[in-house]
Length: 458
Image 1: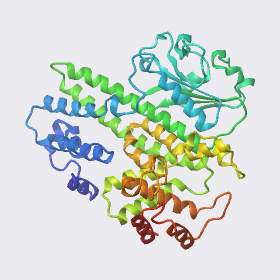
Image 2: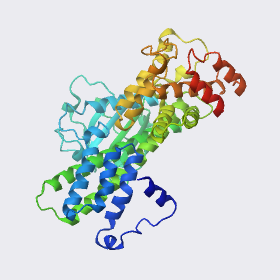
Image 3: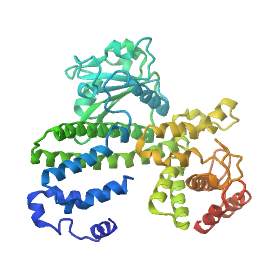
Image 4: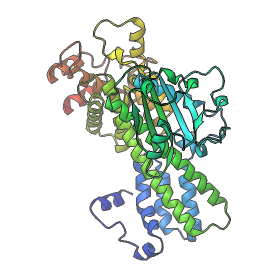
């Protein structure tokens, strides 16, 4: 595996080894050389990568090889291993979209959010007379939300269908003064500002996210970009699930056409690549949104992650562990994304309940990450990064080496970056002064070995 990665980076021809294979099946060589490396880079098991790598020398006939490759991909990118908001078949399953809508209202500090999907992605809901169907809302309905059968047809002239058909964001700053008809079931008569964001990617258009504020408001671009990224991530994930359904139907055929198998492999691998890109983008934007909401004057999360990676290198940790700790460093304050900006902008003394909200933010972050399965491996690092070396930390009072290594690293990196950054209540400390403050707590709050690595790094 490593030799192929190095050969590719050094400029060796991707197709240089099997020109005759290229003539028969252009994607076979790409699949054998590239896909195993790609999956490994995105935290997929080495075992699968090795299987795909060896596929080139497999002596089975072409149809069986293609079916085996597709089966391997489907087994990994099935519903249980992607975002847990897909592939629903009954209205009970769709309740998660209400949670998504409520989370978005908290992130943006707005009054309402609604999620619409096309009818082919809203399986199990009895509203087939609409092209776009309401599947989730932050509004609390007295009765079952799906009994109301709220939706729109693409021929309707409104902000939702416009965003969907044009694949563009529609923003209306004076909704009450417009000619648009409010939906009273969704309390839209109170709306002042409306934002309609299409859920689409390069190939699929799956729905629309609608954001509503009952007062005049402007959005920080970091928060707005995060919701746009979330919409694209959902669209790509749902597109992948749609492709997986097609693959499963094809695999059930006793005599599938080899051209169809090659086509679906090409589509599936392309979507996997898109999903990897969207996941990476989402993580980066999530970290930036946390910093923006926390009113950091520098990219605190990114700098903490970078310092964590340097400490990992100093400790000679392997690349995969270092990458996981890097992501944990990016996202260790992720719980703050759902807290009100008023908490961060407060220069005076916080009320007890506000202080508890800030203190408990790691748990909020863990809950958020648990719903994004591709980040599941960083959860323990984030969950325990408020523990202390002496066992007097939170949430479980773990002590010494029982605290996950990643948690110990990002905790110290976060503390150092906070000390050398300006805050509303104090000026930034110089490097030497910050290290002196931390040295007083080495062996109490911090792992002494990691503190030593920090000194050597900075």
